[in-house]
Image (tube, rainbow, N blue to C red; front, side, top):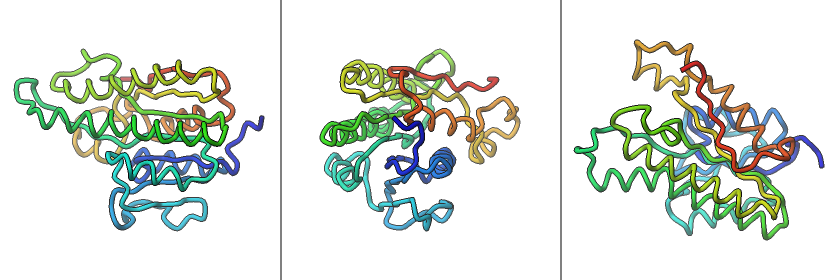
Length: 235
């Protein structure tokens, strides 16, 4: 088995975001063909790979809609890998969390990850491809004591972690490897703007996170499955 991503088709949800851009860039440098769903009708102006010949940017894909998710995955030929970065964050004291806000976190983080995992697994099984799936949980999903005001977010990311391990166990005899990374604070422009007094040198760089994700999605990873990889930097 080759240990490169050359010519391999990989889905990257959330690929137009800060981490997504770093992951897509890393995968392209490794020779992959990237399929990126976009929730909007037009390409975001900040996404640098819109016209890249190995990037398929597909618009109007609502990742919370099972039919649209299935339709998106059905047009990816020979799916090798599926990386799920799409998600959201909210924080509030538990007594102030509305039921709708809790449901939104579960939909945005856990349900979209499940729908994309399911569609990817269906595609891989139908093509007899022993591919790779990489989810993104969070430090708060593995250690909910880490911060106040994160009940809804931590619950949704803990669900992603649990799904990852359960799927890996279920698929271990079918060759599909399922893992997740669990970042703490990522060094993004948004986080720097929101936390101007924090020591950003202790955060996880986008490049380091992208390297870890690309490895888990690559044929070079032949043994890791059901692993929740902590990406905590020096925090």
